Amino acid sequence: MDSPLQSRLEALDAGLRSHGSLLVAFSGGADSAFLLAAASRALGPENVVAATAVSPSLAQEELPAAVAFATSLGVRHVTPQTHELERAGYVANGADRCFHCKATLLDTLRPLAAALELARVATGTNADDAVAGFRPGIRAANDRGAVTPLLDAGLTKAQVREASRRWGLDTAEKPALACLASRIAYGIAVTPSGLARVDRAETALRALLAPTDVRVRDLGNDAARVELDRETLPRWSEEAQSLVQGEGFSTVEVREFRSGSMNDLLVIPRAPGAPDR
Image (tube, rainbow, N blue to C red; front, side, top):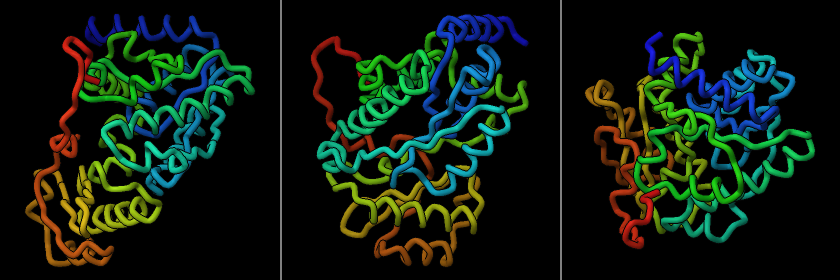
């Protein structure tokens, strides 16, 4: 193993051991899965609990995979309900939506950690996330005392994936999959039905096209932008178009996938020198 990665893994292990026990906010993605595996190694599975928040913003396919992964580690897995759709700021879907989402998550997990007699709540924020631009969710988690072991150890997304491969984790190559609300254009209210239809559309496209990356972006007025990885784009078809239109999107455009493309429409005011996240 190369020296920079090895030294960061050693720092991660030491940092995890310093906490004694952890409740890991486990979305099922590559980062939180690696964090969960690392915590189990460092602290023992009996001192770690995985928590996957269940709400309409979680894609239906994600929960069974999260359960299976936690089970494979011998880690207890809990599925608390979160109620971000009861927060006006989240439903309004402004530029600070992710703040309200993460605030709801941590406000749910902190008392859960206390009830389970676990020392801290940990998130899978990595070193790239901290410099990746507009990330209000990171601020919400920081404000609520969540620890960020991957970030503290300096581990980047690429290093998380490489270490996951070397540990034989099946999440090593898992595509990034943000919450379903990220598919809805800012300013359009987030609703259970709106989240469900983009979930259904993406699930149908995965079954038909088997893309590496897919997003169905709700642009409002029943218009959708489908984003696919470059290799899958040439396989777009009338059948694929019909699947998306069948979810009530009368207008469908298709382009290459780019993570965070919804942020292009944002104008984010901030004080000079303030961190852009």
